[in-house]
Amino acid sequence: MLRENVYRASYAYKVKTNFNTDYLLSPKAYTVHPLLRLETWNLGIGTFSNKFLKVQSTHSYSIFYTFAERIMLTYFSRTLTHIGRYYLLLTQVFSKPEKGSVFRKRIFEEIDKLGIDSIPIVIIISVFMGAVMTIQAAYGFQSPWVPLFAVGVTARDSVVLEFAPTLVSLILAGKVGSSITSEIGMMRVSEQIDALEIMGVNSASHLIFPKIIAAVFITPFLILLSMFFGIMGGFLFGTLTGVVTPFEYIYGIQYDFKTYNVVYSLIKSVFFAFIISSVPSYHGYFTKGGALEVGYSSTTAVVYSSLLILIFNFILTQLLLA
Amino acid sequence: MIEARNISKSFGQKQVLKNVSFSTEQGKTTLIIGASGQGKTVLMKCLVGLEEVNSGGVFYDGRNFSEMGIKARKAIRTEMGMLFQGSALFDSLTVEENVAFPLSIFSDKSEEEKMERVNFCLKRVNLENVNKQYPSELSGGMKKRVGIARAIVMSPKYLFCDEPNSGLDPITSHVIDDLIQEITHEYNITTLINTHDMNSVMNIGDKVIFIYKGEKWWEGSSKNILQADNKEVAEFVGTAKMLKQLQKS
Image (cartoon, rainbow over all chains, first blue to last red):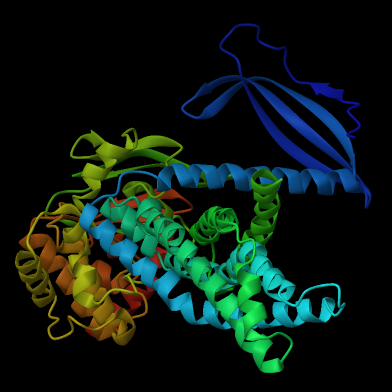
């Protein structure tokens, strides 16, 4: 991968050989060619005193990177930085709340904002999702060898296993995620988070912890609601369009019903709720700049949340169903 | 008393503050002045702990704030009040909820006692009948006054004001300046104001610290600043001098 033909370019002083030595690396980069880059790392050796290095010696090491290697390294280091900062933020978030009564009030406010306000969009999406699934299933099962109630079975399983938890979570990542990032991001750029810190309030915990609890609590209910309305949407539009009879559809949705499928979906929804609330909060909390950066953070948060939902969907499906 | 001892702060290779030392007195107003980009805001952020210093220390009545852990810092922060440049009121809360916020978190007062204190503070900053309004419904001057009310609601020992006059007309600026000075003397608070408004310097500054290129360039009283023989200070206050001469003539 990397061409590790590291060579020593110069010496300034001799290395001090005792156990109190510390090291300081400072990078300098030169673009030799658009596709080739020379990076020189200056290594200072000495002892740290009051956060500054008293340098006893310095060395220079140079590494050549190709353009592709450089891009790969940049993304890798950026991803590692994000993971590290996200972890550190979570350690701040999961700490004892300043005051129980205020914390409880904040949780209910967040349940209202993140959950109750999302009910209409969840219902609308679920009804049409169920309708489309039913019509598509009926279209696929036109053979006389396949019983008509299979339409109900297919619609039910598609909605319960995949569409309700994943599709609704993706929609919530867009709706709730962008709202969380904008809210916290605006608080950051308008110094409201600084104001909390000055008061002695753990701003990360005060702002983010209630959101995570509210999302983890309310999202499974939204998913159950989505399952119900998805199946009902399939029934309504399936019978109205005449692709399935009411009797066949109801028989289908009851046929070989496995409760575990619902449990599996609810487990997934808890993980997705954590992603939907914590990832946008992270992006909002570390926003710097003004309104433009808040918008950029919101977009980034939605993209990352959606990607993580899809990745975790695969991992959890493999773990719980395989 | 707030004491800064040899504070240095760098962002990457750029050194923003270089060995800044000064002290403030209780019941007095100290102003940090200087042109934009000289390090005033970074200095204030270092004093309140929003930025960590690279070297040196900040002492609150002898307590080394820079070396403290989170818990000890929290205790000192309950003794601080701060008025931000943009007021930093919580958008989702009403005026009275904003002012009551520190009380809700850090005191065990009943709702009636809290509201009594909130009303007292709002009355002290000459604001009445705005309790149920949201920050977006207030003017710039009213927001500043709510910010001051929130800053004093916990009876702080130290009051920090970052550009209290920015975005305000001269009359409202004067009102805010007077209010800060009255509160400082009334409650015997140690007040530190970050400003580049020379009117504030002339009106309320007991002590003035001039910051230039991240260093403390000049220190003295507001009365002496017009006679300062320092070139940079003279340039900075030149406009004010001119205005004063115009007033005299």
